[in-house]
Image (cartoon, rainbow, N blue to C red; front, top):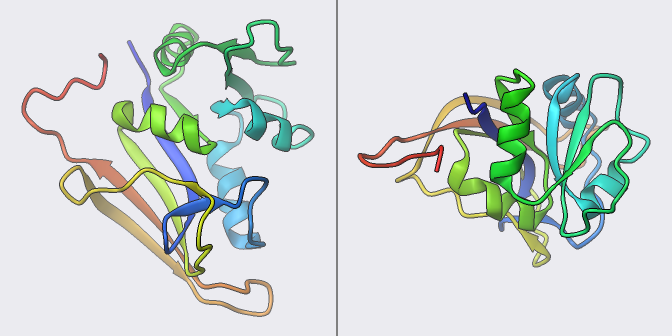
Length: 175
């Protein structure tokens, strides 16, 4: 059985995840919730995101790196050629959920197969960069919201919203 696919991201008010390298804001409470949500889990990432997160991975993490370069070395993980391959591998390992952690191209490839989203909506405008796919109210319903005001440790207010896919007749996420 194929595991659930959840996209987890921090997104600016104008829809961007980054200017091209790294996370553009320092939000310790969001980083803590990201670490908690991803602890010991299988993660789907692009090569650049994988490179940026090297040194961050903990025991139990299994990074699946979406890359055309099959010779890429992924200690503790694997290279995958598609989102379908990543879901198949995670399912064969008995995982009930695969978490997609970016970047932009991987989010775009994974969004049509996603069951849920955990999005940190950061109240900052980036004005450009790498976009997150549009979250349409036709396809996604917010089911949980956790607001966090700006404070001395958080330059920007943010809200973590969990969305569930609205299932339409004929939609097959396993395809």
